[in-house]
Image (cartoon, rainbow, N blue to C red; front, side):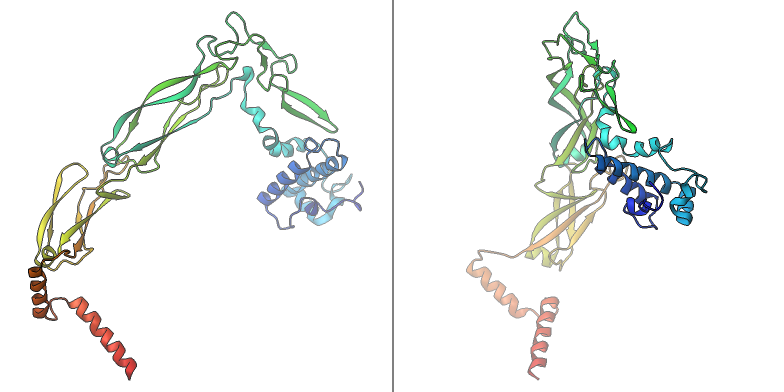
Length: 377
């Protein structure tokens, strides 16, 4: 293609001339995957576009070549030009490797002999706040795939062995030429395992693993929070045909507590007190998370929602020697179901009350009175 008919490399990659390296690479990967001949079999137009995209990226990703192109255009890479030749030389492999994993990444997850890594497993566990405070060792039972004992995980019937796949020679991958490049893909005969089993093990049907109930011990440290994840390496599913096992992830959730609400390492407790205790002062005891008791002194004239702090009676901080605090919020309870005598006494108290008794409410209504008075004027 002559220089006069070639498209601008920036237009080919659908980027601005000011695009940085990350933008260039991102656009190249997207377009290369879109027009890859393997995704568009028999489409000559896609093959041509794929070639143009790669040629443009080969130039623009190189600092010196890009500078030459910006100055001289396509002429920079004609025979004898300042930039030499772009073409499909050694640089093609490096460009194509940028998208190779996106297109054929699954093939690389299998090794020779089909030794695939087992899947990771998830187990949801609910624990109490007390268990999160003190830590515990829990026993759990899970159904999990383990290595088949009958065939020792190879998948073949006892007395037989897997045979090397004739299609790929045991590599698990085959190569296919398409025009100017060669593709490598998972072998369709053995599905990337590199081996074929003619006589499958009857216990595992050739998988090399079977499902069993398994009892595991899980150590839950002090201070774990809701959503904490614990990883047990190698306790997931067994790999196919002797492959390495996956991992087991324990996800913890905390059950709702009857007294405490947790906020990080701090605990909050809401305690109702009588109107008399709030007015005259007094004290009461509250339980703590370590199954002890703490005394809270209430001064005279305490208002509803006031908080009292009890130091170091909260939750331990995970993997630390620090401990949170406990906060007690008092709520003044209004008396209900009063007797006639009690009603009379409260009415008498109201008559004897002065501005110093309930300053907040009296101050509020004084402001309300002024507000309406100003509006009347």
